[in-house]
Image (cartoon, rainbow, N blue to C red; front, side):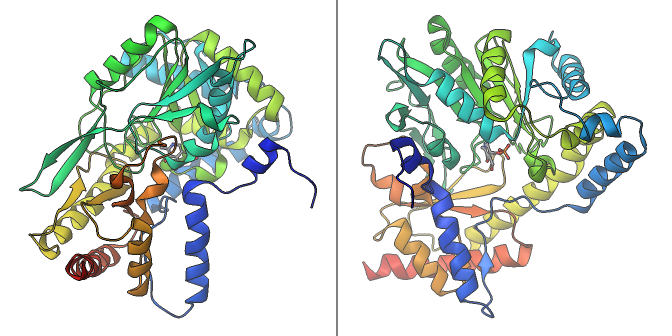
Length: 422
Ligand code: PLP
């Protein structure tokens, strides 16, 4: 094996949830023949109406004179011009903005966008000063753990908890008494709606974070992979927030195109230009086939319509099945708390004072055929010890109704046993 550099060693490690996914794949392989209720997936389901939309757009592209231009030639680093124009028109109309093509960058998936931003704005400056990438509310997306070439730059903040004990529900809030955004902040990053918790920061909380960052010209990246207008995986009212120092980041992955890798950054021209150059150096430009079909689905309005009429209700119903089952099956006297299901494709369960770790609980669940994701992998950048980090589970809403019901009933039994044993 060749010797690895510091960055090489770091980047060739599987971080966060990817490491657990490996364990899950091995479990499924080893248990071939055994029935597992796999509630771990982050991969969205293939919904027939959504697949049909992309098929139709593909047929239209194949029949058009643009086909050769799209797949047989290099394009601009900023992205495919008709997609940029479609997004500018759609957002200007929908949100009363004044975007031009200079405010938009298309990237190969939004994960790459976070990688560019984390390293363009976070890490060491020419003066040797460390600029932090601030995650204002931990837990958050596990993928943020792998995007910084300078690991020490990632800094996450513990939240406060709104607890409704009688209802067995809770919600995270940013802890503004702790959150520090200063001249040593490089950028701020959070998902809204949030993977893994399904939390949606309120419009006021978002504006407050942006206002803390504005005096220092710190870009605030709002990861809108689950937000309206597409995939519209918000189950509660929310308005996208725009502003001079806000980079609004989209992904088409949860709108049915994860394999095509399409991310979009919308924001200030200067920020877009820096990220575009980063992209040119890295990969020249994202693939254009997916961009071309996306342009067509956005221009016709079909994507936003399917998001609202098909994608959102599908997952919202799954969450209702999950919460009804837990309410019925979980022992009332246990301190279990389900995070308010405000969006995304996951449920987040907190088992307060759990007598074993989340990893051990995950192992016990596997024994009864249920696979979820232990929560401790969703606290990237939170270095301080906090028992809560080992008391949570992420449950995917991509299972069938029957899998969710049986899975949650078995989980309730395991939880009862584990607390009783202690
Ligand atoms: N951000 C969040 C919150 C996600 O959940 C995901 C994927 O699951 C991503 C970003 C990465 O998405 P992509 O790179 O496919 O756009």
